[in-house]
Image (cartoon, rainbow, N blue to C red; front, side, top):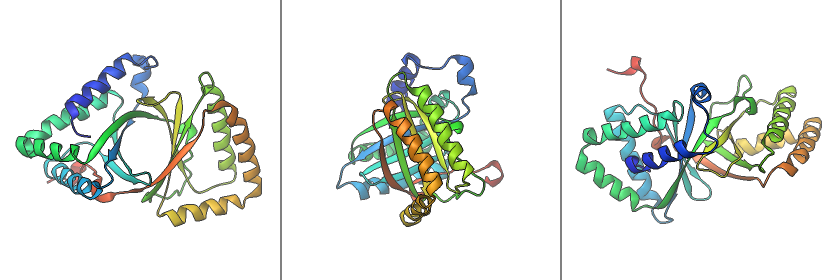
Length: 263
């Protein structure tokens, strides 16, 4: 999670050697990426892990850490930490910000904190996700409550990405034509995942409200017919589909203060 020097080196090497890395011109177009850490916390260490994460957020608030963090507790016992950075080069800037934070926090205190945090986990995995607005559905008036999320993964067969993208665009169009009020956000997996892959995130205020709205959408027979037909077209092009639900942990998440909010 926070051995940023080592982790940053590994990610940077991957970004330089990844066979599908974008050219410089394409890289310049990527305004923001999601840098995701999947934290595998030991079953009996969840409470201790969350206490330590709260201490980290307090240090962020005290010393003005410049990057946003969203933390989620998933139903399969993983924790997800999502950082938002400006392009893939922003990952190096994130790592550098950790190096700046350590002496402000206290070298000994931060080193001891890292040691304790490591003791709560078996391992973690990192990945980089590039937003796909054209595969996302963001209607006006969408809910901004994301206490409950559903994260879906669509691994795609090699050579089938373009076909899947076109079918997903048709899926978005079908939903838009029926004015479905509930959004989802899509992204392409880039580094640290089995490629090609597309990820989707849906959100709601609670598990109950999420599944109630799914029931309501299911009552739209015309829409269900269209989306089921599109799903049947997608199936031959994918290697499977997986999803997991979880809860947003506001107390373990962080928003940098805007300039107007700083003293």
